[in-house]
Length: 417
Ligand SMILES: *Cc1c(COP(=O)(O)O)cnc(C)c1O
Image 1 (tube, rainbow, N blue to C red):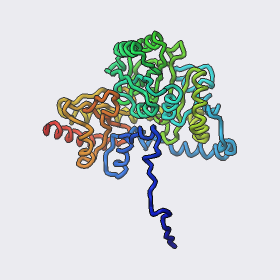
Image 2: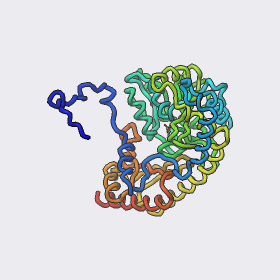
Image 3: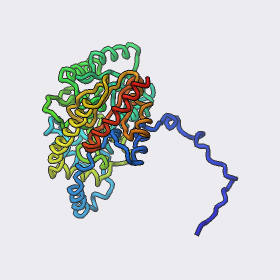
Image 4: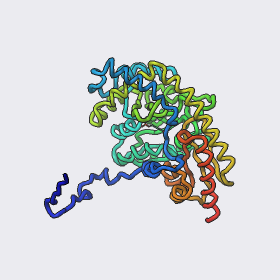
């Protein structure tokens, strides 16, 4: 049966423009999200997102863990829980981080977040007033830029070379900003397997960064989703493990080592800050899904994660190698890229005259291949000729074919300009 309703007042439509908050007017769709829409239409080789290999998600083990949890402890697990996160998970994380070289005193140093993304938003909530300054790398993680921008901060960008953040430039910029009376709230860095550049910060630079932080009394945020699976034996030290002054906040996530769909991440550091994060998180979601927290802590307790890590390392290393080889084989003269020792991306620089944002439309329509244009990762508006390529989600065959297509598109772009 169909009912026909008459509109009440002649169909006058609500004018949302009149009521959006200032913040809402600020929001823009991320280019990755817009891309994902395209990709979901199928038949496109995607180097766009940052998704794990779908074949490597341990579905069966997770199904068993979940079944047992619900059967044996369902009454508790399906209730509300504390904002800071379950003690079980925070204790498992204390052990996990300890094993990987980051020591914390107690589970009270850790707050569980709904993905690292919530951690980024919480940083904005508790530290940024409009007009405050945040220091980031150039390029940096797009979702971090978006999260901090919501709190109306200004950015100072510090370029990254093949040893990571240029700490000499950092010091100059900090000095300059302090001289102008700017309020620097924190330095956000992804020191190990940086997203999107793929580089890792050298030990000397890490020391220098902490010296600068100490000298100017600054907070450092170390975002670390990738250090647990490196493709080559490289020496590195967590900033957090070198920090003697409680000025490093460490954040990480289960998204890259288990499954992004769980939306479980964590923030660890000085208790004074953790308590404030906790207050700020209360009004966001009360608590992160307790079921998902328990799945994550069981994945740690039963050794599932430690069994996954070598598999992830093997599969991704091979895929990275496939992409590197394809780039060498097919990319035209004048393109360059760094060899990532970990992470999920290769950042490619096309010749100066190639506008990768403009080229994307043609890549999607004609060549059926997707990537994320480089400019979105640059707070200074540069990077127009760069692009980020993900190698973990596509199959090896798709990697070869996709790079071939992309190379054709770039060649076309070079010749037409
Ligand atoms: C993938 C990634 C994350 C993960 O975010 P989640 O919200 O936990 O999925 C965080 N930071 C960086 C730099 C990343 O690359």
